[in-house]
Every structure is written in structure tokens, then in C-alpha cells.
Image (cartoon, rainbow, N blue to C red; front, side, top):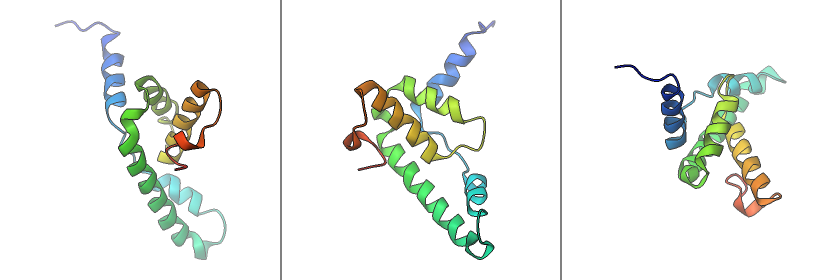
Length: 112
């Protein structure tokens, strides 16, 4: 069976739009935690990982409320490096703000 070239990306986009990505944010948190005093880095790492988990849970509960096009765009824009759920939430917030004509803190998944 011959699959048209354009059919492949569409399948990828449908998957991205349907479910929240499952990223390992350890490397990003480790990098952030290493800035500053070494003695505090383990505590910062744990705090970062906990924060990312909380953000992921919040995004998971609200994932379907974001337009599929925004989910796709935001995931695609950050997946090429060590992405975090905080970055994904920020991207989705900005996309929502642009469509609503400004910042609406009540609509933000991270500011409720």
C-alpha cells in the first residue's frame, strides 16, 4: 500500500492533539537546579520536579479545553529541546490570550 507523503504528518498531529505529551523533565530541572549554590541544588531539583508534575496534572485535566491547533503548535514549538510542562502551559496561555484580545487570568490553567 502506498501512503501519500502528506498523510504521515497528519497522523502525528492527531496524536499530539489527542493526548498530553509524556516528557521526562529531569534534565531541564537538573539544569535549572544547578544554577547557584551546590548545597541547595538537590532541594531545587525536587522542587522543580514537583512543580512540573503539578503543572502536568493541571494540563492533563484541561487538555481538551485547548483548541487542537494550539496544542499542536505549542508542542511542536518546544519539543526540539528539553521541553517542560511549564513552557507548554505558557504557550497555551499565550495562544488563548491572543485569541481573547488580552490576558485573562481567570482563563489561565496556571493562574487559577
